[in-house]
Amino acid sequence: MIQRLASFKQIARGLACLLPLICFVSCLTAKNHEAASSPTGVTMQVTHVLGFESIPKNASGNLSIQGNALRFQKSEGAGAQISVGAIQDVFVGQEDKQVGGKTMAVGRAATPFGGGRVIGLFSHKKYDTVTVEYLDQNGGFHGAIFQLNKGQAQVLKNELVAEGAHVTNLEDQPAKPSAQENKNESK
Amino acid sequence: MNPSKTISSALFLVSAVLMLAASQPRLLAQTRSVQVDKVDPGDVKIEPAFTVAIYENLLEELSKTKQFKQVFRSGDRNASGPDLLILKIKVQKYTPGSETRRAVTTVSGATKLNVRSQLCSPDGQVVLERVVDGNVRFFGGNLRATHNLAHNVAEAIKKSDLTGPPSSVREKK
Image 1 (cartoon, rainbow over the protein chains, first blue to last red):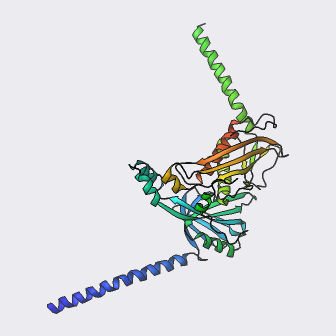
Image 2 (cartoon, chains in turn orange, brown):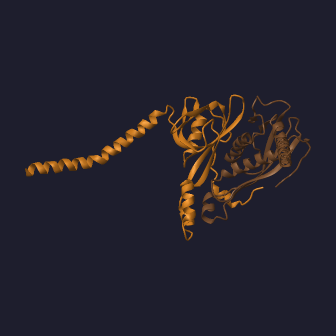
Image 3 (cartoon, rainbow over the protein chains, first blue to last red):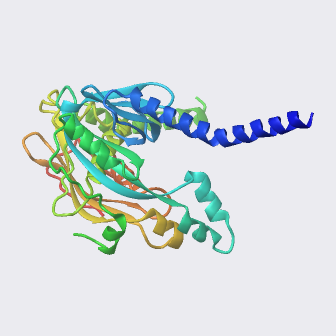
């Protein structure tokens, strides 16, 4: 009986040791699966700010390069795509935004003793933005803005250039908002 | 005949005439189309995202006013004809702001835009000229300034009488 208990304990310990390893392997497999889902290797979780075909403002979804097309697929519902050849220019920028949206803004305003300001000081996040200028079938000029996680914008731009998108300035340095703020007013 | 009935019918007639007169410019303006040109940054150092956002928001806001038969994009091959107006926007001032500074200080960090908008006829004559501001001072991201600006430009066009002579060049802050 005592021997049985001892063997149970050994098995349990073995399983406990194996558990992190199993988790790690499953994470790796999932990542590999995600990468495999896009044929050219770039699929990014983005927020559509404005301007991309019929996609509504502030819709979140996946932006990917599939074949010769830049495709935005909404998390729920329809997507839209444009030809990479129609792209006239791509710009990279940086944005510092408050997190939490309207709910958080109301919460900050309602916090007494100026506590909202302190919250505001810490509740912000930096994002990259990508601005894509392209022409439609009638020659009409369009501009679309996407918000990406920090560091992803240049990757997307490089991928678009590799696919044949027309870009005037290859190495965009994301404009840092804080540096621009110092110049109080440009004429 | 009852005098009160006569007065009320006269009032009704007057109000109907006034309503008809008020709707006249809109009906006439709807015979025109507008083409929105790309935003000219001029000498101002402004992020491309802002110029693109102004352009896209203008297209949306002009469509909302229902003042024009059609709203065309810059370079659209279908945009032609004597009734076509061209909207040109030139950035005059741009003050980059910060949402975080606005949230922390309330009084600083405003994003400010100031543009000169010109509505031109196909032969290049200026039909309408306005200097318009678009700011974001308290809530919202920096790009909200472009939405406010586009709304103000569309409102300025809506308030103006486009049916009048095309020489009336006025400025308004």
